[in-house]
Amino acid sequence: MRLPVLLLLLAATTAAHAERYEVKMLNRNDTGGMVYEPDYLRLQPGDSVKFLATSVTHNAASILEMLPAGAESFKGRINEEIDVTFTQPGTYGIRCIPHYMMGMVMLVQVGDASLDTISVPDTVPVQARKRFEEIIVRARQAQQAVPPARDAR
Ligand SMILES: [Cu+2]
Image (cartoon, rainbow, N blue to C red; front, side, top):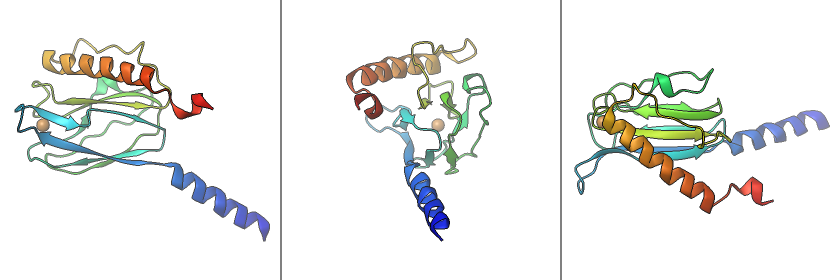
């Protein structure tokens, strides 16, 4: 009877490892901007994100040109709170379809994907590109300041 107990423990450990994050889809009253908050997350494969309809008229959809190879695309309806599990390592660009032209985007980095080689495709609208470039600069700075825990061991 020892093996089943061990398997059960392993299963419990694996399940506990996956983290759940929440991202608000938001109209910011102070700046008037439409944003995801946070607009950048670093995850481990298997972690999930719930997109909250904090303000109305937003959605969350993957940007097809900014998906890792082999990753599944997703698209929530307007005001829909979707749960997305990120299994494929790499960087994911996410957009709000009604406000893509206004720069409502976010970046999700899964696993050890490098931010050094990331480039924003030409097909991304100007405001969204600007937002991505700001996010990438901030994310690189954050990574230099706080190395991932596993590298500190
Ligand atoms: Cu929006």
